[in-house]
Length: 206
Image 1 (cartoon, rainbow, N blue to C red):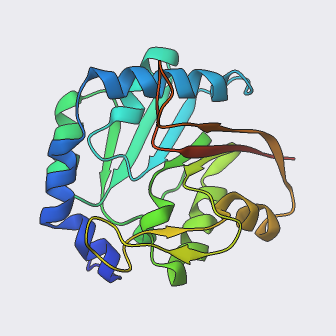
Image 2 (image 1 turned 180 degrees about the vertical axis):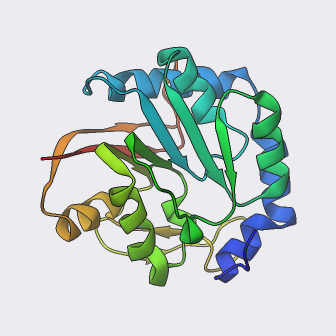
Image 3 (image 1 turned 120 degrees about the vertical axis):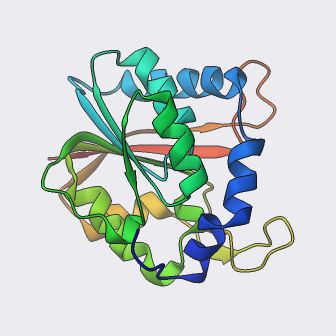
């Protein structure tokens, strides 16, 4: 893995990221993610490959495997502890390293990022947007905390570790050939399949 580029990357590659991976586990997560992704995938066609940015231990990819049993799945993950757990699962290609260093010679039908843009240094968001766009051959899915204007809020006692804004809107402004296919919100108090107040957006290249 190459040298980290931001304080936020150092944070997630270290002990805090290890603890996060150990804390967020279980079949309940896979079930609620499958409910979310079934809605998103229902608005797509012929998705045969997915690249997830910030895959952690693979809770999203495991959910996608149940919905896309024949798809080529891959995930990039900066935390070595999480990447090892993802690798143990064996259901997806694991790219261990920084999103900011991602350099591939292929594209995927769908690029996905969920709960990761909120932790990216705002000065480097454009670099992540570029990779989400460039490595997608058709669809981009963004599922994050939403706010119409950029804000920074404390995260588990840490400053400058969680940022909210209109990520999808910024991506569409940057790449005008993208169209908004659909979007939705999943409330943390949903009685069946809760998410952490996530707003998702599905974009498609024209």
